[in-house]
Structure formats: C-alpha cells, structure tokens
Image 1 (tube, rainbow, N blue to C red):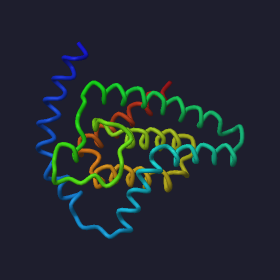
Image 2: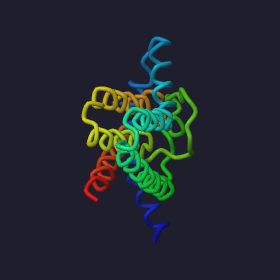
Image 3: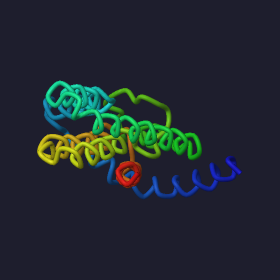
Image 4: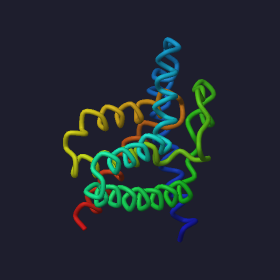
Length: 181
C-alpha cells in the first residue's frame, strides 16, 4: 500500500513539478542583491527551529508559568507536524527543484533529501497560529517571519510552490486540530 501511494504520488508530483519549473526559474534566477539572499538564508536557517525555540523561551521568561500552556501546545503541535511531514516526504520521495531542473540553483543546504511538503513552512504556520491564538499581539512578529520563511524556500531553490502551499495548509490543519483539542 505504501509503495503504491509512493508511485501514484510521485507521478502526480512530477507532472506538477514540470509546470512549476518556469515559476521557480524566475524566482530563483533573478539577480538579487547579496543582502537579499543573505536575509532569505537567515530566515531559512532561523526557520530550522531556532526562531521558534527562542520564541518559546522568551514567552516563558516574560510570562513565567502562564506561558506554559502555549509553549506545550506549540511543542505538541510541532511534533505532530514533524511526524506528518516526515511521513509524506518518505511516501512521495519528490526530488527538490534544484535536483530536477539544472537551471535552478540551490542557494543553501537542505536539511533533508526530499521536497514535498515544505516542513519549514508547515512548522512556521503551526507555530504562528498556536502562538497568536494565545498571544495575538505576537502577530506583527510571527506572520512576517512565516511569510519570509515560505518565500525563502522558493527563492533558495529548495521547494516548489506546491510544496510551500501544501506545507502551509497542513500546518494550518495541524494547528487548528491541536487548538481544538
């Protein structure tokens, strides 16, 4: 069953990728100033988890034990997101754009081998939704950062647009489910 899912998903994602290459070539191939690429690399690296761990720590320092429910909620939702995206990456085995299209450059090292879905985007949406459910005033900080993380994954040649969109949808679903429970 798992292998059948992998073959079907792989074929469908390859057809979709062929349509997305032109978009990515434009996003990835634009000559950007060094500071812009540096900012996107930084957002991508902070999106590895550092930003979210720092946010959780800052909430605990600022609000003490009152922040514990929010932080635990972020941790549980983040772990659920990790399980989901790792399973999907293994089930689909979609190559990254720079691996499938020679005109797309990889501008930073990926954390793992496969592309679908974007785990960075999934987690950015999960953490932003949970954090702002508890602390709406954090929206000015987390949502622009989330947008920057999602954009970085495209411009740096690591993900397709569909990887980022599905990552955001899955992240929203995981967060909403976690908040509902």
